[in-house]
Image 1 (cartoon, rainbow, N blue to C red):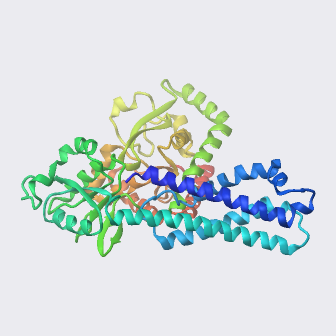
Image 2 (cartoon, rainbow, N blue to C red; image 1 turned 45 degrees about the horizontal axis):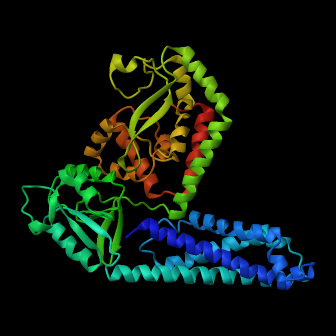
Image 3 (cartoon, rainbow, N blue to C red; image 1 turned 45 degrees about the vertical axis):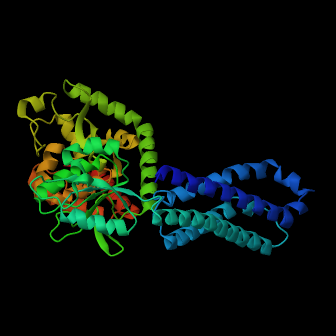
Length: 467
């Protein structure tokens, strides 16, 4: 299965359909309006600059709308009911926008013509778009049922759980690429020729085998070992599922019932696909605006940081972000340059002697965090999301609160629900207490919640309650 190719098929079909429907609509506009406004023939009307401009731009408008609806995020395994209602909602919104932005400029002989054009456009756009989409989706489903396009699954485990997972997934049309042993002490239930290697061999196996999904099916092994293996799978950027069992340390993940078989979708969350795309676009737009419009403030702070104490303007540090990938986070330096050498890598405390006087001011109003808009623009972070931590502290948090792994399924943020409701945490114990707020955010992600958190954050910045 090639997800990019399938996505491209949907994009091209939507573009072609939108262009064809717009052409049909322009024929209707000519018959109802344009021939009475001086256009002698249909050919002259279709060749006019305004019509040609619309013929090019309108399909791109539809692609943009479909993108923000999240339709292209999941090219395989689409729900036909979901596809029907999703297409209907998008068409209703799109036609309404185009009607008021473009079609309302027409001057028909009567108001009834407006209604005929509106409903005709809605009907053509919906039925043709959905008919083409339905045929593509149906074709893909048939291919998957015949296992011509079956997802290749690599099962992590070789015991009884892995054997049961093999039976279940095979019935559902998945193709088992192989098995990876976890514990050498456990007797394998899988034939030896199907076991491709051990967990340590994963980097080579992932390069050699075409894999679409990873399924973790461990037998009785310590929770800490399950979490360790899970973290090693993140950087492959593939969907990860875990078979749902009693007392599973991953039980706070999103459970998906696949034909009666419960799996924990480790890399999934409850945020809608439309919400994800809108959030990502808003992140980029806001980051550009802040970095551009507030550039004088950045320059002023940089000058004051440099003047306040010797050392660089910016502080950089490796943090763990989306899908467990490390990245470099940037802040305005608030400590003396040799603070780390003098006292070691410690969390910042209230009234910390390592913090410069100007650094206290920056922390009070959280101005030291503003360079992270560059991280947002790069795609390392989001405006709102769980705060990223260092690997050292993550290892200690996960050993006591395994659900922390869920936070790596979303981009870390400049601000978070934990930061506005709990604040800075200067010990691992406080980080675990703050984790409850971040998990609450993760389980209830929405654009409205993001806006609420941003409003709280702005209040904190303006009132100087950042520390």
